[in-house]
Image (tube, rainbow, N blue to C red; front, side, top):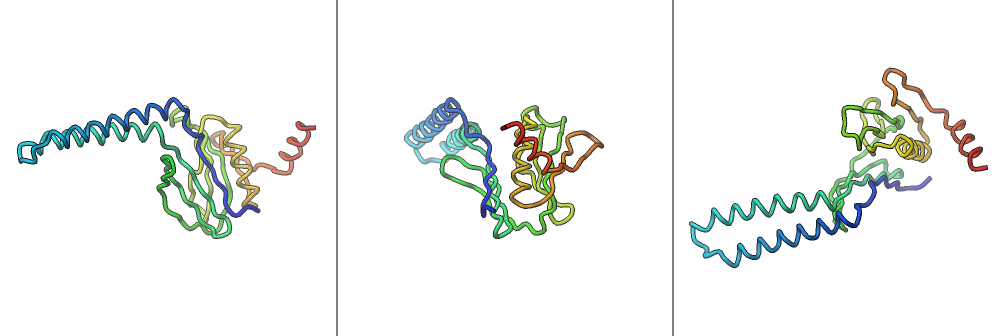
Length: 181
């Protein structure tokens, strides 16, 4: 059993990183111009505040283009850390998980098309944590299966409303072996 599992969104496409870099550069330029033009008098505070608002807005858009989510699960110490990563900066805190129960794959048609299949880790009877959300059932089930194997817990397919079923992982392994043979 591995001691740490990482569940991550795909990295951003290169074109999105270029857009983010351009937006960050533009925000830096606005800050520089604002600082160079300011006379440090009371009447210049309002234009500086508007410039700062604009910079925050542009920076938020840039962050959206270059960030991605990751979840680290430390099995050995029974904890997980959801993070938002921007380059090498990782923002998130470790949370303790006790009593892993099962992993489920859930279908939510009310969510955006890109996040309709959720992989949830259930613990302490009725608490859960969303680990992954995407539009691909096969990817969601693969992540859920691998996690359930690592944690040695059950796997629930809850993609069909009112027809939840426990997955027989041994049967799934046999099917996978037959397909690769």
